[in-house]
Length: 561
Image 1 (tube, rainbow, N blue to C red):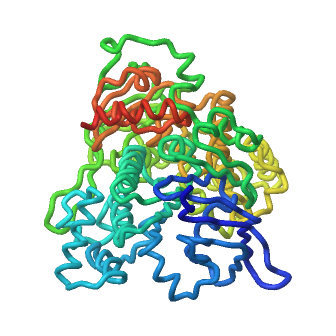
Image 2: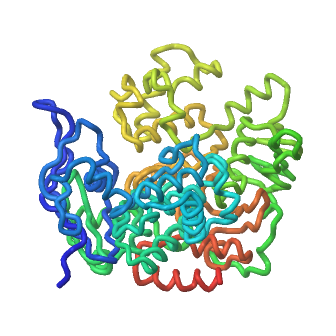
Image 3: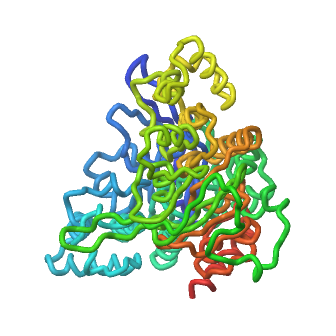
């Protein structure tokens, strides 16, 4: 048998010094063979990213490592810093989770690539430029010559990730560490990046260490899987063994929490309706007295000096009935979040009608504005940035009640906040805590409680679970469904992931480039999509079943050929 390319043995990592040191990774061991894709999975805090970054010594200065990390027969824990810098890039490439923060914003893509190429290879300026262009072509960057002169902020998320992969493979490394490389991308961009990584593996024979919490991605591309929990390896198996017969209870719970496209109760309970009678791009069904009425909505954003405005939303129309959940889905830039911001009054449209219970959201009447604030609420995508870090949870949740003059009595406010905390399954003593003292899932529950404070008739949920682990995501989705069934509010659920939308929505509106591609009941969109774009969107969603996912990958390739 060939020697492993990477062998990690009894790896432990602690942060701090002396008695204050805290060990977060405990005796982790795994190996990667040449050309193999190994996925390390687990929830936030499981130690998977710390273990991966230990390999290339990209941990904070107060980190302490022990054990063995052998790469190509060389122990990296005993290597000096100069040797580690040499191995980074030349032997091991890294693709980070968020390229916007990993790429230097003051350098062009061409300059960043030239730096990556020149740091490990000798050559002329023209030779390095040619190599940089070849790398962008290799990662299928659109218009590579033009991208060379652009800065990271001028690229889309998927394009930035392509540039990051180009930098990672600049010196033909034997191993690529992809740390949550697709988490922040929409499903179609994620599918493209995964295809790209697999293509790089086939062309260059590169092994891949994939760090992720997305079990659908694991089923799609991994050969073997290591499951981590609490800083320890709890299970290791081939991808087929892990999904068909997981041994550990933790792994079983992790897999059970993953949404599986086409297997939600919403879809199973929705009768199938013939496509030719149901497909339309206008409001469907017609609602006599909708809670939300959107008609021919157009939203423009100012363009660069001297250029025409950018049309983000172009003629969108749909209704939301009382107690109905409608999913707005599409890729990044499709206009779904912009529509949500218009509905809640945070963005002004160029034209069109948006009404909540018959009241125009653009009204200038003070009393009607106040009434709209009571009838509609929003849950933001990132609770870390939407919660005041200097306000207690009690003050955060009660703020809508105080701002809208419902009550200012402290005892009454505390009573209502306690009821809301109980409704979102948070302890009552959390009323005196601050956002930084909570986990991501708990912070999102606070955002839900704040949105529900005024008992709104309409809730806008803007990607509320996209940044959460699968088990936390499942808990938040279950909570939203529970609250919606109990209080019967209407909801616009915004997401790029149809497998998440189907957990809640009875109807789906698919957006592309600011226009409605199609809309219909959830079963129709998932199983009988009419539009080619919708078919590609559905096909791009990975499912947590390696056998089914292989067939889906073949079908998706037929759609893109």
